[in-house]
Amino acid sequence: MHKLLFSSLAVLMLLSGCTTHSLLDPEAKKEEPLYIDENTLILFALDAQNRGDDAQAVGYYDLLYERTKKGLYRDQAMGALIHGRYYDDVVERVLSMRQNSEEISEQDQRYFIIALLSGNEIESAKEEALTLVQKSPTEENYLILAEVYLLEKDYDKTLDVLEKGYGLNYSEQILDKIALLMYTNMNRRMEAVERLEQHIEHFGYSLAVTKRLAALYGDLRNEEGLLRTYPHLYDLDPTAQNAEIVIQLYWNAKKVPELTKFLERTGSNDALLLRIYSGEKRFSEAVVLAEKLYEETGEIDYLGQKAIFAYEAAKNKHDKQLLDSVISDLKKVVEIKEEGYYLNYLGYCMIEYDRDIEAGMAYVKRALAIEPDSGYFIDSLAWGYYKQGECEKAYELMKRVVEIMGDDDEEVKAHLKAIKKCKKGKK
Image 1 (tube, rainbow, N blue to C red):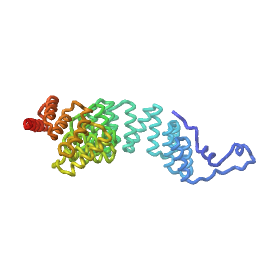
Image 2: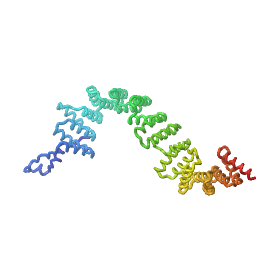
Image 3: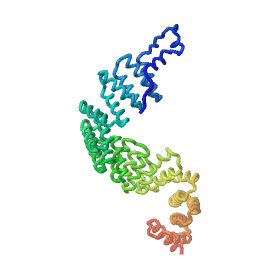
Image 4: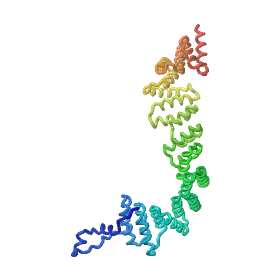
């Protein structure tokens, strides 16, 4: 325990500007303390507290009380003593106030109990707390009594007192203490979770209760409970970390539709949402999202994806305006990024729609230089030769495609059939 060696006299000396010389010199005139108004003293006290100088803050509050006799300042002084852990001074002041038959506020009584507990005077603290609750059964007073029983490790009484306090106004602060007591001290883990769930059922999700529930589900490694709780936690506290946890939970549970809705609603991971759209062939949505991502990031991949999704989404793939846009975008992409996927797509579009077969085949050959065993790329080159009337070359390439991919792919089937017919016709 600590004792505060500081008084309002020190503050008076500070404010009056007294010197050692003036105190010792009998000829020196006695100086009156410099008068400072109440608001200024309050500012001094607050500044001292902000600087962590609780001792100086006590001196200012004491001076304010002496000048105004307002109980608020005496309470503030007690609060500063508690914050500074000057527990002996708290005990001494309260006992002095009682001896002088002065009225003691409930807050000061609670500070008194805290000070007694800090000195391990548990019986005295319990007596004070019981008296306080009997006189004034408030949430704060039940909490202080519960703290006493908790230190005694009498968990049943602690729970009983907390339940009475919770019954007053369904305080989330008390509910949190009930849940922690059950979970940590009483080995009633599922009951602790159920209490939080019951509160939520009646009063809805709040940040404090939802955080605690998520923490308990996490400790229990209950992914189903986490999955129910974390989307609500994200809504209350929409941080990137909470979003990532929700995404991971949905992904682990293989709840892709729920994950998709979450991503659409929150915009928390558009890149992942784009991959989902692509995988589900939702190309119309993918076009819009890819364009948005390209505008936001400038990443060339999104321009390439936007072009491909626009082509795949189109009902009329022969539309001139569509093809102009797709080819133009893909040319921009391959100027910056030499990637087989984009090169082949660009080349195939130019071959298939007779835009420039020779140039299209050149793009496909660049793709094959990167991935020489890609059945899709070889198929595109074979189709180029077919378009040029070189059916033998096309057929030899298609045999390799079948070796690599088989002949189940519908487009491969169609190309192979056309090239065989061309080959037979040439003979």
